[in-house]
Image 1 (tube, rainbow, N blue to C red):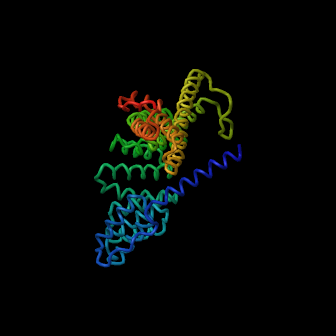
Image 2 (image 1 turned 180 degrees about the vertical axis):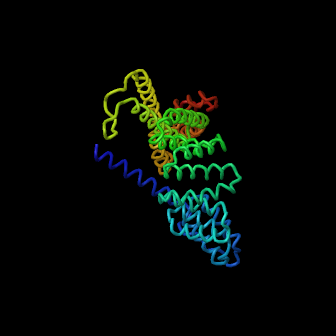
Image 3 (image 1 turned 90 degrees about the vertical axis):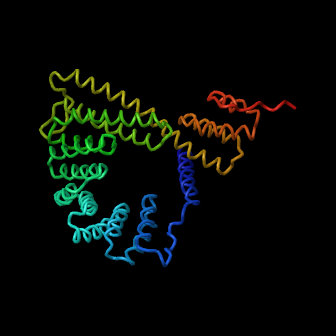
Length: 362
């Protein structure tokens, strides 16, 4: 088993390494000498949004060399270095902007998030409250209120933290990050305010339901499946904390094995719901493992595109992950290589596609 596990890990590492071969080089192309600061900023933004942080850093530094006083360049530089976890450099850019524009939203938000990450919650709240004053776009309002909720709960202001998290959800009811934050804040606040446990469970159930709806729209989308897996983890945390509240605690405050009087029915209901969620998550995780197998099989087909056995496995995995379009496409490739392949033909017919007539027997 150890050798098999080692082999699988090695294959995964190889697949990830080889998948990067065709990507853009790690170093961004040198900007044209005549490029303006605005053009460099836009190019840096595009690289940043594509997740290419090294390239984005090089381009934004080029923009700053041409125009060191550019507020937009400094803000984008701060955001890029923050994403790269270089908090010191990011902070320098954000503070430079706030010296010129004390109420700049992006600078105060970015600096506040850095302070949150460093657990300097009181200072973070000061910055984030300034950002909140000037936030206008729904996405920005959600972002700053989520960050403020984190700062408040870190300061021990549990009620204020929950209020901010609720405001974030109201600002954009479709924002999944806001819903996730509300559950997390309620659970953190429950240590001081136990009455937050039941609302935390209710919000966790609503969060799971919303993610389930998105998964149903695109059941082959691995990112949505991973989001649902995280939502299940959060729901299980809420169930566990609520269940623990039904037991007596010792002098140190630790949960004992003794149920509080009259809590048997409530404890049983929570245990049953926990079992249901564990079962649902197990099925989901099996699907996620199919996605992992799919990645390996896609790479195998890339290396040996005319291997019918590999294509059969690939088609089966696409069916398991409910990607009908890809499954049909793979079946058509199988029939190009092996026109008398009965299973591929049958699948295409089952999804309403004509596979054509098999060739006449020789």
